[in-house]
Image (cartoon, rainbow, N blue to C red; front, side, top):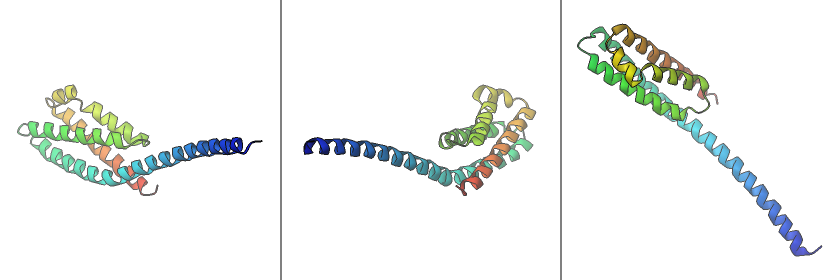
Length: 144
């Protein structure tokens, strides 16, 4: 067997092994990045949502005067929830709760919700439940 053929076969095998190792490193790097992103951003987002939650609760007590503030707070919470949805790959419970909340306050429903105080309370309860779920996910992520 010619030495150049042996070197060529070895080079081809090493290239295949190198390609596989590159794939494994890339996959692990993406997992670490997503995990870090969740750990870094989730507490900050939970604090923001909790602040919005408190504002909505205070505003609901004076319903007629605060409808515009309530709408603005729900829109802010919706944007934060959408932002989290892109970062929570793999946490099905959080994603399901976020999607449920987003369905609850989509644009058409938000306008009709602000006409009836009870509907606004239901959306507020969904937001509070979402915050609880996110807090639990954050606690779980510290163990990963």
